[in-house]
Length: 337
Image (cartoon, rainbow, N blue to C red; front, top):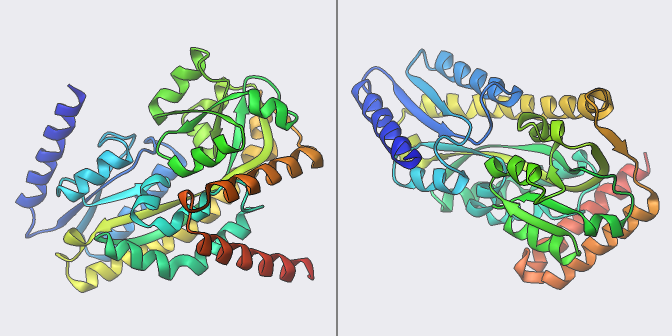
């Protein structure tokens, strides 16, 4: 029934777009991010900027909360012409641009700045891969570290491995690596995570802080473990079939707006992480669990061994070697300052 509603809704949207085509173009972009969140308000403001910059000739219609299906279903709708774009929280970014998988490998990056540095250097590769997949890459934004929000405190690798953790089921490579590390990962769709926790099928969530707040996982969990499991990166893709119908000046306006929005979203993400991890979660009842150097080093070593064991199944070895070399140079440079 829900699927039938989605199809009718999108068909109606396509019809209404065509009717007013001479006056304006409507670009339909989907995301699983819930409406009313800080993310949603920011991307809506980007849409308003595009409408203003094109004198009302281009309007962005956002479909929030997974109304168009999960990311893979939304991608199929893009390919069928029912949607024009997708704001991906990571999974479809990695499908359309395989190089992007390296950005969310467990324990590869130590902070946001490292992830942002590598993402910037990979942007030409990502642009080419997006083009080959039939998309224009409008932007990439670091979403920050994925942490563990748990029912019980986790203070060492043994406790971490015994804890059943929900992870977004679309992150295949990351889940494979975390399982190789000995973690007990229970993949499921985003909309099923809370129910799995409430039914005691999982004991915690692997999530970035902003998503834990948006989907109310932080209100369920009792502890937050200060261990950076991995870093996530979002992207915005627009189908070339849709973008190329627009005049060049409108295409340029869209690219400029998303480029500006990229920087705003990165700054907002950092600010929100600082607020949530700096005391807001604690005031809401989440107890922070500090991570010892022993725990951290054991986690990083387990992740390194998992990367070696998975090899090509995770990312191409030459790509991983390239990123590790970039990170070594970056760390050496910043250690000297």
